[in-house]
Image 1 (cartoon, helix red, strand yellow):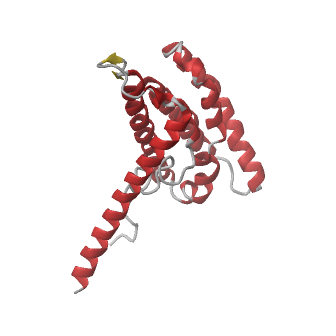
Image 2 (spheres, one colour):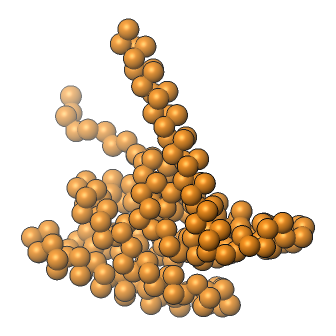
Image 3 (cartoon, helix red, strand yellow):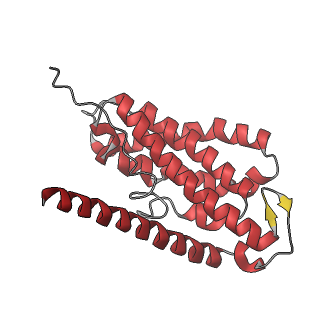
Length: 209
């Protein structure tokens, strides 16, 4: 019988360790810039193209190199990936991409790349790392789209760019409301996570009895 452990994809990055709602590693772009579905889409695509691609590339940087030098290398790779990312986004979303470009620049030094790589991703085989990191990107997308869609409806009376009613809460486009909404979603996410943890604990306890 093979002793090789079968890989099981962890859903941690979606809820329990969501980098926006739970750990708060990449919150600023979502809080400030995710005011519509289109903006949330741009943030998600840029996060995928900059952070995820950089994580895959930086995996090949030798671990023997000093930690500080490795971190600088990660930032360098992300900065290089920023260039084609902005070229593509400006071609796909010529007006909106320029409006959120400063928040895309922040992604070059985001904590998913600079912290999670060393503490989690680079501790497992490449294929497992690629799948695990993609789950974290999906968690970012989940938060960004939730915030963007809700604020687009409240602030502009639109859904996916289509007008459906008068704006119920025009102030929803402000940064303050972004903080408020992310806080509410974080509380909901934490409540769901705690409920699932308690349910799992109860099952284990009953099985032990």
